[in-house]
Length: 259
Image (tube, rainbow, N blue to C red; front, side, top):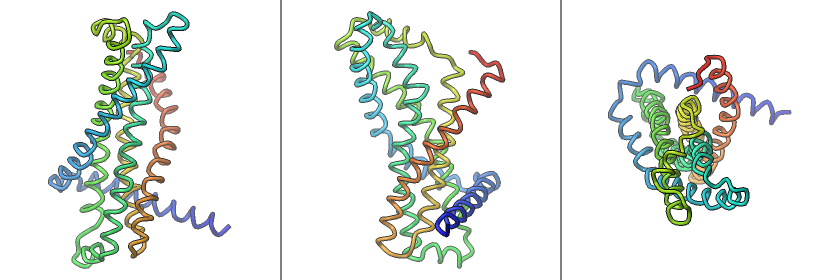
């Protein structure tokens, strides 16, 4: 019972922390452009190679596995459409989010945990420097704005990987492959799926920063915070995705957006 109450209390503190960060983003998010750009470069440019390589790999492997199945029924010509829908609607956004959660969940938790260990957080507080606007807000905004960009990159890389596999072992030309990739796609599917990753990025930033700031003052605690940051960030992405997808489908259906 005590453990459950502690978890509820901890979640309440996190919710209060998230609300404070959100308000601070609206009020003072534009005041630290330099730090935001530094963090954006860290998130976006630091993840480019990993995301691009993962996208090409996923696209090529998915083509290999799916082509065999579709060829058995004579539907291999539809493979570009199937691959594009699978990647752009769900696989690309969730994979990009998990890759960033793996990098930044640990990185942010370890970074802020180290600041707590070395008493830098206490020093900043004693000097009157607010922690949330100076340390948390730029990191959360950078994660939120970088993740849609990385999602577009992983989508493009996956389609490129599928095209490479098609040209190497398939029968379609590059022009036909590109044209058939658009057969089943609609903007009402692609745009919300891409933009939702901004929420994933914000949650990853929040969870990573919160975990680091709550770490105990020991080297072992910093290592544990990094591990918790990864696990919590990934679980947060899965949980938020489960909640937000039905909401997106409802809003799209209610608005009549069918383009």
